[in-house]
Image (cartoon, rainbow, N blue to C red; front, top):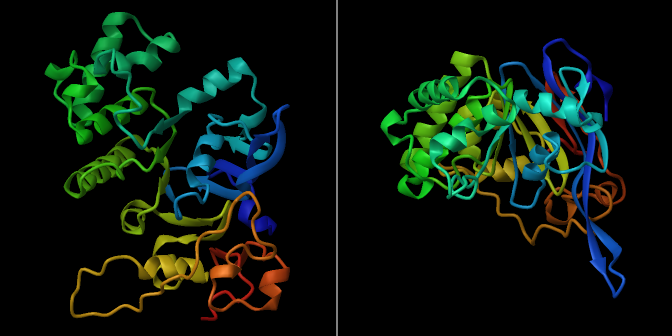
Length: 332
């Protein structure tokens, strides 16, 4: 990968370098490792302070695993994750606990991520208890403030998760992350389990909180329309690799990778009078256990040539601020 993509900058809050996460497959009586699922295979990107970097791709492309590995909820096989210059992957227990205050996550399933046995006030305050922040009265007051900020009534403090709707439960998840006053929040498909009418409310809430508190988001989603609405820059992943990275407007106006172009063509068009060329990809996504040689997208690519089957393209800057991993970027 070309160096300028990861050029150090005081404005970078997060720098991910050649991150790899493989899941072993066990077999035989002795349960030896016989193969590996290459979920994340050499991903690099930066996230600037105060911005939203969207990561998009089909199910199984590795985007969620990337987010979880950045937070060390999954242990990486190799690579670097630098948060404000500190190596997250090498941090000891005490340092990692300190880092977790600044790096929070909002999970995809707002019900599964909440303990059904405790009230939402206890769930929201749990981080404060773990980090020994404030006394019980101060924690309760802080919970009230955060609940009000995310649109929840303080009269609901002592209710349990099953008493809330999906949208309300996701607001609880956002409040739980926000109460720690983090600098980075990984949003792992935070609206995919919600009704469309509720999705816009949650997205607008996230944008409002970002402006108010100066938050930085790593926003993971498979819906390009959602990513286009909330992101400043967008990274596209395919089969464990980052295949394109660009500013939002540039990427949606002029995608350079054929996979990105195919994804954008699938976005529903609200204007019935305009027509958009629909690109239907042939075949299934190859197995991450044994990905194809060369470019991983070549078995489904309509512009693939011999070089695509033999040589893996590097993620290179094709024009200012626009990166693509394709031998024939933009030539379609």
